[in-house]
Length: 220
Image (cartoon, rainbow, N blue to C red; front, side, top):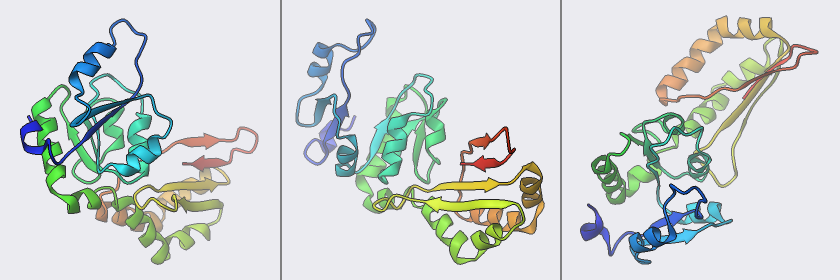
């Protein structure tokens, strides 16, 4: 669907080793599909970060029910727009239209369409995925982060980001107990946070840890 238009402008890298599952794709099939120029099968690699950094986008059209795909997380961590399926696990790694595109499973026409969009629009490739960083920067500059840190019961509220990655943000906030966290959620500060989340169309995934001996709560 794309070869005639892009064979001299685009290279596809297929990364991963062979599987022992009898239903898995065979070496012969892979080598028949990959011509070594337009589509290159790289086999198993230990330098995935460097490979992602050398690419302009990441496509992961898996139609299996994944967990949270590590490969998509790695692609987001180096600031690459992602095209993946609107299916369990995969959809949690993309804000559709913001950090990449979600497509129906087994829909090669939709995959080709989204690939074509990103091939032809360098500005869109760079833009996708930046909203989380912008949100965190405004949270700090507007004073909301310090306001949260000053709240009774707050033990920690910090953002983390790789030095060489402008798209990925990790927030760790910790509270003395559930009551302190509940008071925070009921406060006017939460309205400020919600406004900024809406401004940047930010979607969050939260993991919570509770220390049984102290009942301290940490959200990541």
